[in-house]
Structures are given as structure tokens and as C-alpha cells.
Length: 257
Image 1 (cartoon, helix red, strand yellow):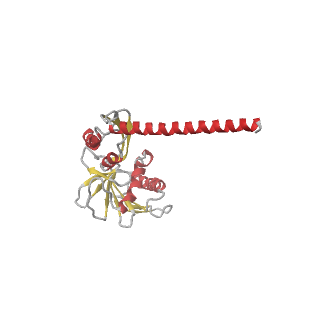
Image 2: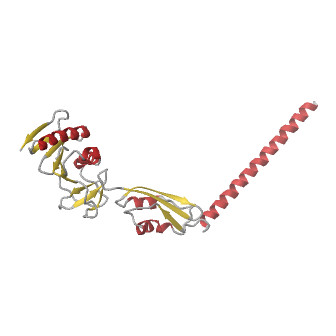
């Protein structure tokens, strides 16, 4: 047999042996790693002992502690954070929550809270704080929500923390957002309350009895600024207004008392 052929076969055989050895080594390594993982998973090496959380105004430390209580003593390698996140997400003030594993023995809870932007009158006459997406947060008090605008609607509804306001009342929320801008609020008289019709038309009830009829919540800033100019002119002339109708957009009408 040719010497070069024999040498080539020897090299091929050696390469096969090396590949076989590496394959066996990798298989053993995988089994060792799997065994180590299973051991760590069932041991107390990475068991949850402590919890850190972002600062919150409405979600209490007790509520966080109750949500994470089932995780204490459980290995981080086998722990599912979903039940903790679901428990905290059910709290009325929680907008979003993420629970992270903090090795070797901790959990890190990050919570973003809702902020109340207005009050809404429920069917029983009680006022509730609501967030910018219509989520009901809690009953309003003088301390909590005293300076927020009140929204009323034609639809009667029962309120509960964590629920949502009726769909038509959502039309008032863009108006509330605009009223939060100093450029707009400084031009208008004080707002007594905001009402929404069954069809979703929004009316601002101003101090002094004037109604600012905005209609659908579109082009709000322009409507409110134009209406503010009309109201200012009437007041300067010593006249009072029954309403300013800006529902048609660029064609405002006004009626004096």
C-alpha cells in the first residue's frame, strides 16, 4: 500500500478518535452540569431570604410582604415570579410590576404606581379617584383628591377599587389632561365639574354657571383657548355667559345670560 495512503488513513483515524473523545467529554459535562443544577435547585443555597422593593406611595410594605411570602425559602432556580407579579398587579394602584431574581438569596420588586388625575361620581353619589386610563383607585377624601376635577356622567355605575369607569366617561380624561397644562387652566375660570353625556360629549361647568361645551374630545387645546378668549371678552364687558359651544371646532357660538 502506498505510504501516503497509509499516513492519510492514520490521520483520519486519529481525528475520529479525538472527535469521539470530545463527544464523550461533552456528554459527561452535560450530565455533570445537569446533576449540579438539580442539586442546587433542590438545596437551600439559593433559597429566597430577603426582598427589596422600589419606593411606593400607595402600595404598602405589608402588601408586598404578603405577595412574596409564598416564595420565601424557595430556591431562585425553581421559583416562578408570575404568581407574585399577578398578586401585586391585582392591587388598585399598581400600573406595572416586575419581580427579578437577585442572586444569591433575594428578590427585587419594581412597582410603577398609578397617579390619580381626577375624581368620578359613582352611582351612590360617592366620589372615587381615577387614573389616566379610567382605573378606579380608591374613594376620594379631602386629603386624597381635594384639588382634582370631578367627572360626572349620565350612566349610573357601581364602583370598586381596581375596576374601570364606564366607557363614555373616558372621554373626559383627555380634557383633564389639557386642564393640567398651565397654559390652558390659567385662561379659564375655575372648573366646578366636568360632565359627559351618554354619547360622549364633554361639558365643562365653570365657576359662575357658564357651560363650556366641548363635544367630542378632539382639538381640545384649540377649542379651550378660543373659548377662553370669548369668556374673557364677555367678563371684561361685565357680561355673563350661559354657555360657549365649541363642539363644532372652529365655529364657536356663545349665549349671554
